[in-house]
Each structure stands twice: as structure tokens, then as C-alpha cells.
Length: 91
Image 1 (cartoon, one colour):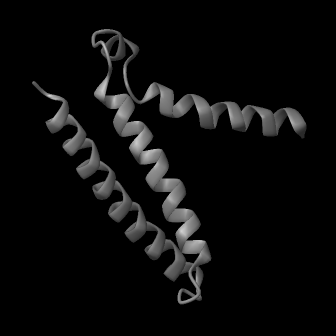
Image 2 (image 1 turned 30 degrees about the vertical axis):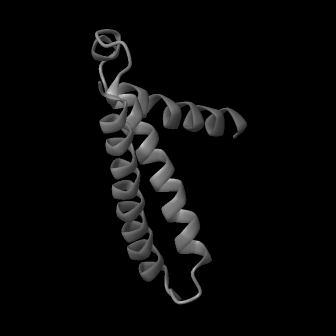
Image 3 (image 1 turned 30 degrees about the horizontal axis):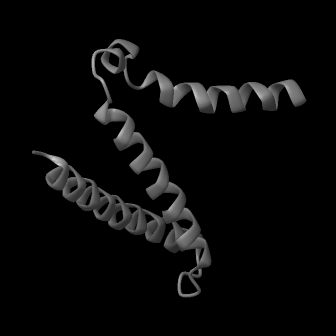
């Protein structure tokens, strides 16, 4: 049972790493795909936490929809911040 759980956790870690080619990461100094993966992870975790803490969403379907809404709001807010940082750091 424990080895099955360990295998599932390894797969959960390995699948996102396989979404982007290692050669694409190696071709750039700092890969923009890494930034977007971090943005996605933060937005996903934030959306789940905020939807679970919401008192207004009573059903499971409402919490899932609210998590999706929070995910997109957080994602766009983070992308705006990254765009502003990129704009002001360019010469």
C-alpha cells in the first residue's frame, strides 16, 4: 500500500516536468515557461485555499466553480505584475 502511494506521488511530480521539453528549457538562459509554471502553481493553490475558506459557497460544485474563478483572477493579477516587472527592467 505504501509503495503504491509513493508511486502516485512520484507520478504527480513527474507529469508536470514532462509537459515542457528539456531541450526547450536548455535553449534559454531563463525559461519563461518556468515562470508560467510557478504562476500556475501559485494560482492553483491560492484558488483552492480561497474557495475552501469561502462561507458563501456551500456545495461542492460551487466550491469548484469558485476555485476556478479565483484561479483565473490570481493568474491574471500575477501576469500583470510580471508584465510590469518586465517593462520596468528593460533598458
